[in-house]
Length: 114
Length: 113
Image 1 (cartoon, helix red, strand yellow):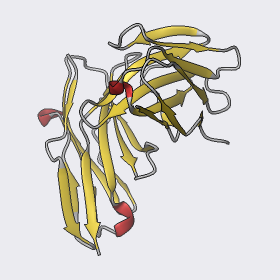
Image 2: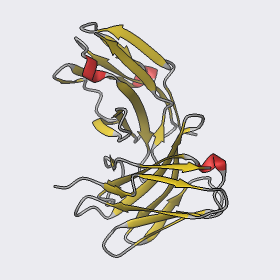
Image 3: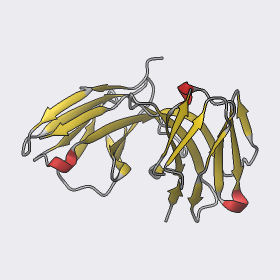
Image 4: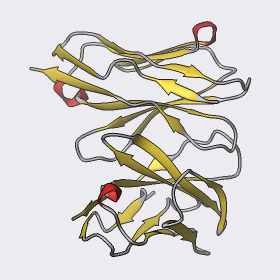
């Protein structure tokens, strides 16, 4: 089975721009979670989607948004980028049908905001 | 509130030494799940183990072993006969049901040849 894929792997943007990151889950998985990883804050939960519905949301400003498509692929968008948005964005895939399932992570997208 | 504490920020050992990574968690729920992930320099989080709160049996997988003790709310990870390839950041994580994964701050492990 193919693993979780994330595109692009690296991205450089300037303040004020917006960015869209993509995540393709493992085949058969219907849930996707997004996490932001920074040296200062560690791994923080952004949101979780299941069957195109946002099921859970972390404590991030409204500039961070996401969506999931009918094929379970997910995108997250960050508008009006700030320097502090520079981070590794990780996507995780899991079946989503019961609690406590193992989440399998993709390679991440490294975003640098200048 | 749920919380995971990995008190060891960095550990450095010489190859072939045994090393234990500590993880202490806090939760009021009786049903929960604990995980360990490895993050090599490439950045991807690699799943190592999952344990539910009703299964306190210790687990061994090759050179890796895990000690789960509910009495002390700990889920420690031991690498026996460490190797350079074990160098990475290791994360312990906690999840209750459908809620989010909560990660510890991670322990950076360096194995020196």
